[in-house]
Amino acid sequence: MITSLQLTNFKGWKHTGPIRMAPLTVLFGTNSSGKSSLGQFLLMLKQTVDSSDRKLVINPGDGNTPVNLGSFEELIHGRNASRKLEFCFTWELPEPLNVRDPRSKFRCTGDRMQFLAEVGTIGEKHAALAVHRFEYGLMNGRQDVLRVSVVRQDSAKGEYKLEASPYVLIRKTGRGWALGAPTKFYRFPDQIPAYYQNADFVQDFSLQIEELFRSVSYLGPLRNKGERLYNWGGGEPESVGDSGENTISALLAAKDRRINTAKSKTKKAFQQLVAEQLQQLELIDEFDIRQISSHRKEYEVKVRTPGSLQLVDIPDVGFGISQVLPVVVQCFYAPPGAIVFIEQPELHLHPRAQAHLADLFIDVLASRERGIDRKIQLVIETHSEHFLYRLQRRIAEASADHPINADQVAAYFAHSTGTESKLDPLEFNSDGDILNWPENFFGDGMGDLIEKSKAAARRHQHQHKRKQAEAP
Image (cartoon, rainbow, N blue to C red; front, side, top):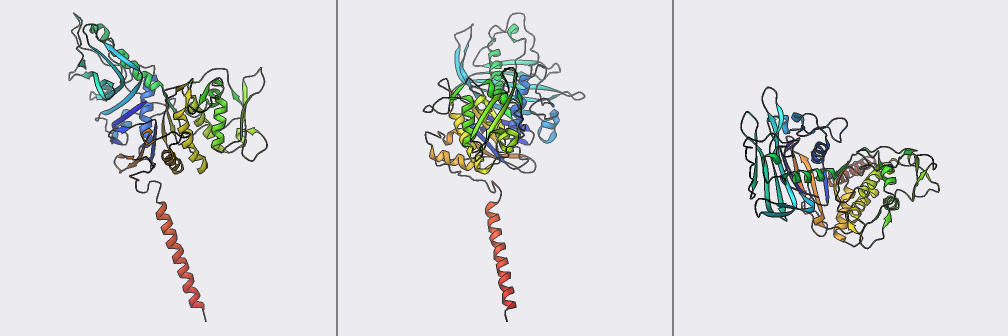
Protein backbone atom coordinates (compact mmCIF):
# COMPACT_ATOMS: atom_id res chain seq x y z
CA MET A 1 0.00 0.00 0.00
CA ILE A 2 1.23 3.47 -0.89
CA THR A 3 1.10 5.58 2.27
CA SER A 4 2.24 8.97 0.96
CA LEU A 5 2.85 10.78 -2.32
CA GLN A 6 4.38 14.14 -3.21
CA LEU A 7 4.79 15.72 -6.66
CA THR A 8 6.58 18.82 -7.92
CA ASN A 9 6.18 20.23 -11.44
CA PHE A 10 3.78 17.60 -12.79
CA LYS A 11 1.11 18.97 -15.12
CA GLY A 12 -1.05 21.42 -13.12
CA TRP A 13 0.77 20.68 -9.88
CA LYS A 14 3.61 23.05 -9.05
CA HIS A 15 3.87 21.35 -5.67
CA THR A 16 1.29 19.05 -4.10
CA GLY A 17 2.82 18.98 -0.65
CA PRO A 18 2.71 15.64 1.23
CA ILE A 19 -0.41 13.62 0.37
CA ARG A 20 -1.41 11.01 2.93
CA MET A 21 -2.84 7.92 1.27
CA ALA A 22 -5.04 5.40 3.04
CA PRO A 23 -6.68 2.06 2.21
CA LEU A 24 -9.50 4.14 0.70
CA THR A 25 -8.21 7.33 -0.94
CA VAL A 26 -10.89 9.47 -2.58
CA LEU A 27 -10.31 12.41 -4.91
CA PHE A 28 -13.05 15.00 -5.46
CA GLY A 29 -12.75 18.22 -7.39
CA THR A 30 -13.91 20.52 -10.13
CA ASN A 31 -13.31 19.82 -13.81
CA SER A 32 -9.70 20.45 -14.92
CA SER A 33 -8.64 20.75 -11.29
CA GLY A 34 -5.80 18.23 -11.55
CA LYS A 35 -7.36 15.37 -9.60
CA SER A 36 -6.99 12.96 -12.54
CA SER A 37 -3.31 13.90 -12.82
CA LEU A 38 -2.51 12.25 -9.49
CA GLY A 39 -3.70 8.89 -10.76
CA GLN A 40 -2.11 9.51 -14.16
CA PHE A 41 1.24 9.99 -12.48
CA LEU A 42 1.06 6.55 -10.84
CA LEU A 43 0.00 5.01 -14.15
CA MET A 44 2.92 6.70 -15.92
CA LEU A 45 5.34 5.08 -13.48
CA LYS A 46 3.57 1.74 -13.89
CA GLN A 47 3.83 1.77 -17.67
CA THR A 48 7.50 2.75 -17.34
CA VAL A 49 8.14 -0.27 -15.11
CA ASP A 50 6.21 -2.51 -17.53
CA SER A 51 8.02 -1.19 -20.62
CA SER A 52 10.55 -3.47 -22.32
CA ASP A 53 12.62 -0.41 -23.25
CA ARG A 54 15.20 -0.12 -20.47
CA LYS A 55 16.51 3.19 -21.86
CA LEU A 56 13.25 5.00 -21.12
CA VAL A 57 13.60 7.24 -18.07
CA ILE A 58 9.84 7.63 -17.89
CA ASN A 59 7.20 6.43 -20.33
CA PRO A 60 4.61 9.20 -20.92
CA GLY A 61 2.67 6.72 -23.02
CA ASP A 62 1.04 6.33 -26.40
CA GLY A 63 -2.22 5.02 -27.81
CA ASN A 64 -1.60 1.56 -26.37
CA THR A 65 -0.93 2.54 -22.74
CA PRO A 66 -3.34 3.47 -19.92
CA VAL A 67 -2.31 7.14 -20.14
CA ASN A 68 -0.74 9.19 -22.93
CA LEU A 69 0.80 12.38 -21.53
CA GLY A 70 2.69 13.43 -24.65
CA SER A 71 6.23 14.77 -24.44
CA PHE A 72 8.18 15.71 -21.30
CA GLU A 73 7.47 19.36 -22.07
CA GLU A 74 3.73 18.62 -22.14
CA LEU A 75 3.69 16.89 -18.76
CA ILE A 76 5.97 19.31 -16.93
CA HIS A 77 4.30 22.16 -15.01
CA GLY A 78 3.90 25.30 -17.12
CA ARG A 79 5.34 23.40 -20.12
CA ASN A 80 8.74 24.64 -19.06
CA ALA A 81 11.13 21.83 -19.98
CA SER A 82 13.96 23.44 -18.00
CA ARG A 83 12.17 22.43 -14.79
CA LYS A 84 12.76 19.11 -13.07
CA LEU A 85 10.04 16.62 -12.35
CA GLU A 86 10.42 15.68 -8.69
CA PHE A 87 8.45 13.05 -6.84
CA CYS A 88 8.49 11.09 -3.62
CA PHE A 89 6.35 8.21 -2.38
CA THR A 90 6.37 5.81 0.55
CA TRP A 91 4.88 2.33 0.61
CA GLU A 92 4.52 -0.68 2.87
CA LEU A 93 6.47 -3.79 1.90
CA PRO A 94 4.56 -7.08 1.54
CA GLU A 95 7.35 -8.80 3.51
CA PRO A 96 10.17 -7.34 5.66
CA LEU A 97 13.37 -6.68 3.71
CA ASN A 98 16.69 -7.64 5.30
CA VAL A 99 20.04 -6.10 4.38
CA ARG A 100 23.31 -7.60 5.64
CA ASP A 101 26.79 -6.36 4.81
CA PRO A 102 29.05 -9.38 4.05
CA ARG A 103 32.11 -7.22 4.85
CA SER A 104 31.02 -5.98 8.30
CA LYS A 105 28.54 -6.59 11.10
CA PHE A 106 26.00 -4.14 9.65
CA ARG A 107 22.46 -5.52 9.51
CA CYS A 108 19.06 -3.87 9.19
CA THR A 109 15.44 -4.77 8.52
CA GLY A 110 12.68 -2.60 7.10
CA ASP A 111 8.93 -2.98 6.61
CA ARG A 112 8.45 0.03 4.32
CA MET A 113 10.35 2.01 1.74
CA GLN A 114 10.56 5.56 0.49
CA PHE A 115 11.66 6.56 -2.99
CA LEU A 116 12.38 10.04 -4.30
CA ALA A 117 13.66 11.13 -7.70
CA GLU A 118 14.53 14.15 -9.80
CA VAL A 119 14.15 13.82 -13.58
CA GLY A 120 14.93 16.50 -16.15
CA THR A 121 16.52 17.34 -19.46
CA ILE A 122 20.24 17.57 -20.15
CA GLY A 123 22.02 19.21 -23.06
CA GLU A 124 20.98 22.27 -25.01
CA LYS A 125 20.96 21.52 -28.73
CA HIS A 126 19.61 17.99 -28.41
CA ALA A 127 17.99 17.87 -25.00
CA ALA A 128 17.60 14.37 -23.58
CA LEU A 129 15.82 13.14 -20.49
CA ALA A 130 17.95 11.91 -17.60
CA VAL A 131 17.78 10.96 -13.93
CA HIS A 132 19.49 13.69 -11.94
CA ARG A 133 19.09 11.85 -8.67
CA PHE A 134 17.15 9.09 -7.00
CA GLU A 135 17.20 7.80 -3.45
CA TYR A 136 15.80 4.77 -1.67
CA GLY A 137 15.10 4.81 2.03
CA LEU A 138 14.52 1.58 3.93
CA MET A 139 12.41 2.23 7.02
CA ASN A 140 11.41 0.27 10.09
CA GLY A 141 8.14 1.87 11.07
CA ARG A 142 8.88 5.59 10.80
CA GLN A 143 12.60 5.24 11.49
CA ASP A 144 15.16 5.36 8.67
CA VAL A 145 17.55 2.41 8.81
CA LEU A 146 19.30 2.75 5.43
CA ARG A 147 19.55 5.34 2.63
CA VAL A 148 21.01 4.59 -0.80
CA SER A 149 21.17 7.11 -3.63
CA VAL A 150 22.46 7.61 -7.15
CA VAL A 151 23.47 11.19 -8.02
CA ARG A 152 24.46 12.61 -11.40
CA GLN A 153 27.78 14.45 -11.25
CA ASP A 154 28.31 17.93 -12.71
CA SER A 155 30.49 16.87 -15.57
CA ALA A 156 30.26 16.75 -19.33
CA LYS A 157 30.54 12.94 -19.20
CA GLY A 158 27.30 12.49 -17.27
CA GLU A 159 28.85 10.26 -14.63
CA TYR A 160 26.98 9.04 -11.55
CA LYS A 161 27.95 8.40 -7.96
CA LEU A 162 26.54 5.79 -5.57
CA GLU A 163 26.12 6.86 -1.95
CA ALA A 164 24.82 5.09 1.16
CA SER A 165 24.25 5.91 4.81
CA PRO A 166 25.00 4.55 7.40
CA TYR A 167 26.19 1.70 5.18
CA VAL A 168 29.87 1.82 4.06
CA LEU A 169 30.28 0.92 0.38
CA ILE A 170 33.57 -0.74 -0.63
CA ARG A 171 34.88 -0.47 -4.19
CA LYS A 172 36.57 -3.39 -5.87
CA THR A 173 40.25 -3.05 -6.70
CA GLY A 174 40.89 -1.77 -10.21
CA ARG A 175 37.35 -0.42 -10.59
CA GLY A 176 38.05 3.25 -9.94
CA TRP A 177 36.09 4.84 -12.77
CA ALA A 178 32.66 6.41 -12.33
CA LEU A 179 29.31 4.70 -12.84
CA GLY A 180 27.17 5.01 -15.93
CA ALA A 181 23.55 6.13 -16.00
CA PRO A 182 20.67 4.37 -14.24
CA THR A 183 18.14 2.46 -16.33
CA LYS A 184 14.60 3.86 -16.20
CA PHE A 185 13.81 6.22 -13.32
CA TYR A 186 14.52 3.73 -10.54
CA ARG A 187 17.05 1.05 -11.50
CA PHE A 188 20.65 1.25 -10.31
CA PRO A 189 23.43 1.36 -12.93
CA ASP A 190 24.27 -2.09 -14.29
CA GLN A 191 27.95 -1.79 -13.28
CA ILE A 192 27.30 -1.73 -9.52
CA PRO A 193 27.75 -5.49 -8.83
CA ALA A 194 31.05 -5.40 -10.74
CA TYR A 195 32.31 -2.19 -9.10
CA TYR A 196 31.44 -2.84 -5.43
CA GLN A 197 32.20 -5.65 -3.04
CA ASN A 198 29.07 -5.19 -0.94
CA ALA A 199 26.37 -3.48 -3.01
CA ASP A 200 24.48 -6.42 -4.50
CA PHE A 201 21.51 -5.68 -2.21
CA VAL A 202 20.59 -2.54 -4.20
CA GLN A 203 18.99 -4.69 -6.90
CA ASP A 204 16.53 -5.90 -4.26
CA PHE A 205 15.44 -2.29 -3.83
CA SER A 206 14.69 -1.98 -7.54
CA LEU A 207 12.68 -5.19 -7.40
CA GLN A 208 10.52 -3.72 -4.62
CA ILE A 209 9.53 -0.82 -6.92
CA GLU A 210 8.69 -3.25 -9.71
CA GLU A 211 6.57 -5.36 -7.39
CA LEU A 212 4.77 -2.24 -6.18
CA PHE A 213 3.79 -0.93 -9.61
CA ARG A 214 2.90 -4.31 -11.00
CA SER A 215 0.28 -4.43 -8.26
CA VAL A 216 -1.40 -1.29 -9.68
CA SER A 217 -4.48 -1.71 -11.88
CA TYR A 218 -6.57 0.94 -13.59
CA LEU A 219 -10.19 1.16 -14.67
CA GLY A 220 -11.11 4.21 -16.69
CA PRO A 221 -14.35 6.22 -16.66
CA LEU A 222 -15.68 4.91 -19.99
CA ARG A 223 -16.22 1.16 -19.72
CA ASN A 224 -17.13 -1.08 -22.67
CA LYS A 225 -20.82 -1.60 -23.33
CA GLY A 226 -22.36 -5.02 -22.76
CA GLU A 227 -22.18 -7.73 -25.43
CA ARG A 228 -24.49 -10.62 -26.24
CA LEU A 229 -21.66 -13.12 -26.48
CA TYR A 230 -18.22 -13.26 -24.84
CA ASN A 231 -15.25 -15.44 -25.78
CA TRP A 232 -13.09 -17.05 -23.10
CA GLY A 233 -10.33 -19.51 -23.89
CA GLY A 234 -9.51 -20.44 -20.30
CA GLY A 235 -6.80 -17.83 -19.60
CA GLU A 236 -6.45 -15.60 -16.55
CA PRO A 237 -6.29 -11.90 -17.45
CA GLU A 238 -4.14 -9.63 -15.30
CA SER A 239 -7.16 -7.39 -14.64
CA VAL A 240 -10.52 -6.52 -16.15
CA GLY A 241 -8.65 -4.10 -18.43
CA ASP A 242 -8.50 -0.32 -18.65
CA SER A 243 -12.01 -0.24 -20.17
CA GLY A 244 -13.41 -3.39 -18.61
CA GLU A 245 -12.82 -5.41 -21.77
CA ASN A 246 -11.71 -8.49 -19.79
CA THR A 247 -14.50 -8.42 -17.20
CA ILE A 248 -16.26 -11.64 -18.17
CA SER A 249 -12.96 -13.47 -18.72
CA ALA A 250 -11.92 -12.44 -15.21
CA LEU A 251 -15.25 -13.61 -13.79
CA LEU A 252 -14.86 -17.02 -15.41
CA ALA A 253 -11.18 -17.32 -14.49
CA ALA A 254 -12.01 -16.68 -10.82
CA LYS A 255 -14.81 -19.23 -10.62
CA ASP A 256 -12.95 -21.36 -8.03
CA ARG A 257 -12.00 -18.49 -5.73
CA ARG A 258 -13.84 -18.05 -2.40
CA ILE A 259 -13.96 -14.64 -0.70
CA ASN A 260 -15.71 -13.33 2.38
CA THR A 261 -16.25 -9.63 3.13
CA ALA A 262 -15.53 -9.88 6.88
CA LYS A 263 -14.19 -12.44 9.35
CA SER A 264 -17.71 -13.19 10.57
CA LYS A 265 -19.20 -13.63 7.09
CA THR A 266 -19.46 -16.79 5.03
CA LYS A 267 -17.11 -17.35 2.10
CA LYS A 268 -18.82 -16.92 -1.24
CA ALA A 269 -18.00 -18.26 -4.67
CA PHE A 270 -16.68 -15.45 -6.84
CA GLN A 271 -19.68 -15.26 -9.18
CA GLN A 272 -22.10 -15.40 -6.24
CA LEU A 273 -20.22 -12.59 -4.49
CA VAL A 274 -20.39 -10.39 -7.61
CA ALA A 275 -24.10 -11.13 -8.02
CA GLU A 276 -24.80 -10.20 -4.40
CA GLN A 277 -22.92 -6.91 -4.77
CA LEU A 278 -25.00 -6.05 -7.85
CA GLN A 279 -28.12 -6.88 -5.83
CA GLN A 280 -27.00 -4.56 -3.03
CA LEU A 281 -26.55 -1.83 -5.64
CA GLU A 282 -30.27 -2.51 -6.43
CA LEU A 283 -29.45 -3.10 -10.10
CA ILE A 284 -30.40 -6.79 -10.48
CA ASP A 285 -32.28 -9.61 -8.79
CA GLU A 286 -30.46 -12.39 -10.61
CA PHE A 287 -27.16 -12.80 -12.49
CA ASP A 288 -25.84 -15.78 -14.43
CA ILE A 289 -23.10 -16.66 -16.93
CA ARG A 290 -23.85 -19.52 -19.31
CA GLN A 291 -21.68 -21.37 -21.80
CA ILE A 292 -23.41 -21.64 -25.17
CA SER A 293 -22.38 -25.31 -25.44
CA SER A 294 -19.64 -27.57 -24.09
CA HIS A 295 -17.88 -27.48 -27.46
CA ARG A 296 -17.77 -23.70 -27.81
CA LYS A 297 -15.77 -20.98 -26.04
CA GLU A 298 -18.65 -18.53 -26.13
CA TYR A 299 -20.58 -17.37 -23.07
CA GLU A 300 -23.67 -15.26 -22.52
CA VAL A 301 -24.41 -13.11 -19.48
CA LYS A 302 -28.00 -13.07 -18.30
CA VAL A 303 -29.51 -10.69 -15.74
CA ARG A 304 -32.95 -10.17 -14.25
CA THR A 305 -33.65 -6.63 -13.15
CA PRO A 306 -35.88 -5.72 -10.17
CA GLY A 307 -39.55 -6.18 -11.05
CA SER A 308 -38.81 -8.28 -14.12
CA LEU A 309 -39.77 -11.93 -14.58
CA GLN A 310 -37.30 -12.84 -17.31
CA LEU A 311 -33.55 -13.20 -17.64
CA VAL A 312 -32.21 -11.08 -20.51
CA ASP A 313 -28.87 -10.19 -22.06
CA ILE A 314 -26.90 -7.25 -20.63
CA PRO A 315 -27.47 -5.07 -23.75
CA ASP A 316 -31.24 -5.34 -23.09
CA VAL A 317 -31.07 -3.60 -19.70
CA GLY A 318 -29.93 -0.20 -18.49
CA PHE A 319 -26.44 1.00 -19.40
CA GLY A 320 -25.50 1.31 -15.71
CA ILE A 321 -25.14 -2.46 -15.19
CA SER A 322 -22.50 -2.85 -17.92
CA GLN A 323 -20.64 0.17 -16.52
CA VAL A 324 -20.53 -0.91 -12.88
CA LEU A 325 -19.93 -4.65 -13.46
CA PRO A 326 -16.21 -4.10 -14.27
CA VAL A 327 -15.90 -2.03 -11.07
CA VAL A 328 -17.32 -4.81 -8.91
CA VAL A 329 -15.31 -7.56 -10.61
CA GLN A 330 -11.98 -5.72 -10.52
CA CYS A 331 -12.33 -4.88 -6.84
CA PHE A 332 -12.57 -8.56 -5.92
CA TYR A 333 -10.51 -10.01 -8.79
CA ALA A 334 -7.41 -7.96 -7.91
CA PRO A 335 -4.80 -10.08 -6.08
CA PRO A 336 -3.97 -9.47 -2.40
CA GLY A 337 -1.97 -6.30 -1.87
CA ALA A 338 -3.21 -4.72 -5.11
CA ILE A 339 -3.69 -0.99 -5.64
CA VAL A 340 -6.86 -0.38 -7.68
CA PHE A 341 -7.35 3.04 -9.28
CA ILE A 342 -10.90 3.69 -10.58
CA GLU A 343 -12.13 6.83 -12.29
CA GLN A 344 -15.76 7.83 -11.83
CA PRO A 345 -17.25 4.47 -10.80
CA GLU A 346 -20.63 6.21 -10.40
CA LEU A 347 -21.16 6.99 -14.11
CA HIS A 348 -24.65 6.05 -15.36
CA LEU A 349 -25.80 5.03 -11.87
CA HIS A 350 -28.88 6.26 -10.03
CA PRO A 351 -28.06 8.32 -6.88
CA ARG A 352 -29.16 5.45 -4.63
CA ALA A 353 -26.77 3.06 -6.40
CA GLN A 354 -24.01 5.68 -6.14
CA ALA A 355 -24.46 5.64 -2.38
CA HIS A 356 -24.21 1.84 -2.33
CA LEU A 357 -20.79 2.10 -3.99
CA ALA A 358 -19.41 3.22 -0.62
CA ASP A 359 -20.63 -0.06 0.89
CA LEU A 360 -19.04 -2.00 -1.97
CA PHE A 361 -15.66 -0.39 -1.36
CA ILE A 362 -15.89 -0.94 2.40
CA ASP A 363 -16.59 -4.63 1.73
CA VAL A 364 -13.51 -4.76 -0.51
CA LEU A 365 -11.29 -3.29 2.22
CA ALA A 366 -12.58 -5.85 4.72
CA SER A 367 -12.47 -8.80 2.31
CA ARG A 368 -10.52 -11.96 3.07
CA GLU A 369 -9.37 -14.90 0.98
CA ARG A 370 -8.07 -18.18 2.36
CA GLY A 371 -8.45 -16.71 5.84
CA ILE A 372 -6.08 -13.80 5.14
CA ASP A 373 -6.87 -10.09 4.73
CA ARG A 374 -6.57 -9.13 1.06
CA LYS A 375 -5.17 -5.67 1.95
CA ILE A 376 -6.53 -3.98 -1.15
CA GLN A 377 -5.93 -0.26 -1.58
CA LEU A 378 -8.55 1.72 -3.52
CA VAL A 379 -7.89 5.09 -5.15
CA ILE A 380 -11.21 6.51 -6.32
CA GLU A 381 -11.81 9.63 -8.38
CA THR A 382 -15.45 10.67 -8.16
CA HIS A 383 -17.93 13.54 -8.42
CA SER A 384 -20.64 11.77 -6.41
CA GLU A 385 -21.98 13.51 -3.32
CA HIS A 386 -24.21 10.49 -2.64
CA PHE A 387 -21.13 8.28 -2.38
CA LEU A 388 -19.55 10.71 0.10
CA TYR A 389 -22.67 11.00 2.27
CA ARG A 390 -22.90 7.20 2.58
CA LEU A 391 -19.20 7.01 3.43
CA GLN A 392 -19.67 9.61 6.17
CA ARG A 393 -22.60 7.63 7.54
CA ARG A 394 -20.59 4.39 7.64
CA ILE A 395 -17.71 6.09 9.46
CA ALA A 396 -20.19 7.31 12.09
CA GLU A 397 -21.81 3.87 12.42
CA ALA A 398 -18.54 1.88 12.43
CA SER A 399 -20.47 -1.40 12.68
CA ALA A 400 -19.27 -4.96 12.22
CA ASP A 401 -21.16 -5.11 8.92
CA HIS A 402 -19.44 -1.93 7.68
CA PRO A 403 -16.03 -1.80 9.44
CA ILE A 404 -14.57 1.56 8.43
CA ASN A 405 -13.10 4.42 10.44
CA ALA A 406 -11.74 7.86 9.65
CA ASP A 407 -8.11 6.64 9.70
CA GLN A 408 -8.84 4.25 6.83
CA VAL A 409 -10.02 7.10 4.59
CA ALA A 410 -8.02 9.88 2.97
CA ALA A 411 -10.22 12.30 0.99
CA TYR A 412 -9.17 15.39 -0.95
CA PHE A 413 -10.77 18.25 -2.84
CA ALA A 414 -8.80 19.46 -5.86
CA HIS A 415 -9.29 22.92 -7.35
CA SER A 416 -7.43 25.23 -9.70
CA THR A 417 -6.25 28.76 -9.00
CA GLY A 418 -5.88 29.40 -12.73
CA THR A 419 -2.11 28.94 -12.72
CA GLU A 420 -1.76 25.78 -10.65
CA SER A 421 -3.74 23.04 -8.93
CA LYS A 422 -4.30 22.93 -5.19
CA LEU A 423 -5.32 20.03 -2.98
CA ASP A 424 -7.28 20.42 0.25
CA PRO A 425 -7.44 17.41 2.60
CA LEU A 426 -10.91 16.75 4.02
CA GLU A 427 -10.74 16.19 7.77
CA PHE A 428 -13.16 13.55 9.09
CA ASN A 429 -13.92 13.09 12.76
CA SER A 430 -15.10 9.83 14.34
CA ASP A 431 -18.73 10.88 13.73
CA GLY A 432 -18.12 11.07 9.99
CA ASP A 433 -18.37 14.86 9.93
CA ILE A 434 -16.11 16.84 7.59
CA LEU A 435 -14.57 19.55 9.75
CA ASN A 436 -13.33 21.73 6.88
CA TRP A 437 -16.08 21.49 4.26
CA PRO A 438 -14.87 23.42 1.16
CA GLU A 439 -16.99 26.27 -0.15
CA ASN A 440 -19.29 25.14 -2.99
CA PHE A 441 -17.92 21.60 -2.67
CA PHE A 442 -20.76 20.08 -4.71
CA GLY A 443 -21.88 23.33 -6.32
CA ASP A 444 -23.91 26.04 -4.66
CA GLY A 445 -26.94 23.96 -3.69
CA MET A 446 -27.92 26.21 -0.81
CA GLY A 447 -27.46 29.26 -3.00
CA ASP A 448 -29.77 27.73 -5.63
CA LEU A 449 -32.45 27.12 -2.98
CA ILE A 450 -32.15 30.70 -1.72
CA GLU A 451 -32.41 32.14 -5.22
CA LYS A 452 -35.36 29.83 -5.95
CA SER A 453 -37.15 31.16 -2.85
CA LYS A 454 -36.40 34.75 -3.86
CA ALA A 455 -37.76 34.14 -7.37
CA ALA A 456 -40.92 32.56 -5.96
CA ALA A 457 -41.38 35.52 -3.57
CA ARG A 458 -40.99 38.00 -6.43
CA ARG A 459 -43.51 36.10 -8.55
CA HIS A 460 -46.06 35.96 -5.73
CA GLN A 461 -45.52 39.66 -5.04
CA HIS A 462 -46.03 40.50 -8.71
CA GLN A 463 -49.21 38.39 -8.84
CA HIS A 464 -50.51 40.06 -5.69
CA LYS A 465 -49.91 43.58 -7.12
CA ARG A 466 -51.60 42.60 -10.38
CA LYS A 467 -54.65 41.32 -8.54
CA GLN A 468 -54.79 44.54 -6.55
CA ALA A 469 -54.60 46.58 -9.75
CA GLU A 470 -57.37 44.54 -11.37
CA ALA A 471 -59.67 44.79 -8.32
CA PRO A 472 -62.71 47.18 -8.81
